[in-house]
Length: 419
Image (cartoon, rainbow, N blue to C red; front, side, top):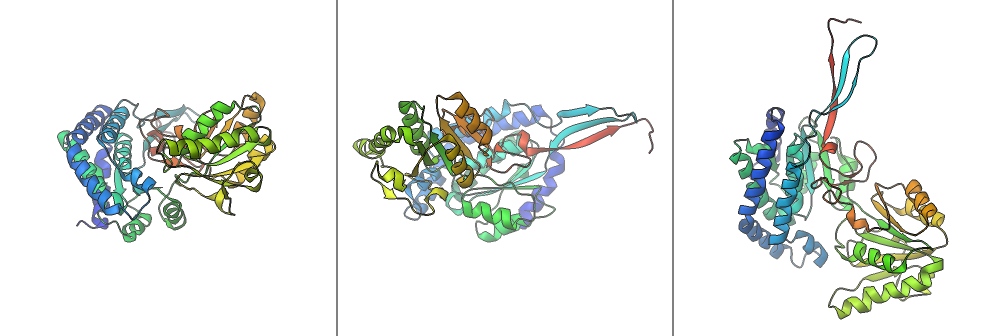
């Protein structure tokens, strides 16, 4: 097994040669990566089945779904890779150009960060997403998968490296940490001089550990206590469809809705219909029902589990949703800004003034009017795929694509000026 330190040294050595690649060469390699991924589908599925077998009984069913790969999901990964090839190259863009009184030509130009490290958990598709975005944006990637997904990640990285080799490029542009213990995560957090940016992508514990302990620059991503507020003027059928999609289409992901706030004027009509849809209707279809954690006001209208003190501050990542009733859009905004993690929030309304107030006052990365929070995704936003969802406000916010993986520098040209 190669040590984490040796992998970091190898990544650092590859940083300079990455700067010499032009757009055509990068796109050629990305196309080879997609082809190699498709050709390695059987090997990847075999590795994933071993991961699934090892994880069975140790993680929940919804978390197992995050881990599971299928031929369709591998094809989606390949298409995501090819989508990145079709995107503009962020490297070398002239962001501004000025000539002050001293006559200097000052250009602000986008450049790669260098080495980008990503710590993630049980979603194997993050492996290909992160690797191709880092590569197209001119960065060397260091990937650190969770132990549950390591076999899958290794098979994916093997395929991506074959794509690099097919383009006669160094394989150490894409690197996978082989140690899945906490020691390797700590090494990445403290890899000053080797890692230019660390991106933790996973649960609250991982993200908190990185943000609090990392000595290298770190972007906070992912934790999603996402809210839906149904306003007094909402179309009830539309609201039910949005809530259903946001909660049940894939409850284990960060853009799934966790909290529902309903205006008191429509609560008596909406909540019983939602309760039936989430329990009786889903059970008739053989689907897992959704447990509703209800406030005292909501409990007067529907059955459910009494909401505990922490239920409105919990990312369930499961078939569970906290529900409360409010009396105004202002009250909903106050509740969301108090309990949100800054990820994605939605208002369902016909009232333009309330929609405008909500989008102005909600302090989150993505704010929706009459649409599911599940759209907060790099692919859905036209970014090809994503490095993660940044819930911070510095440098990057929301789905992180190619442009968020570049910084900038100033290039100044003169003709002998001195100060």
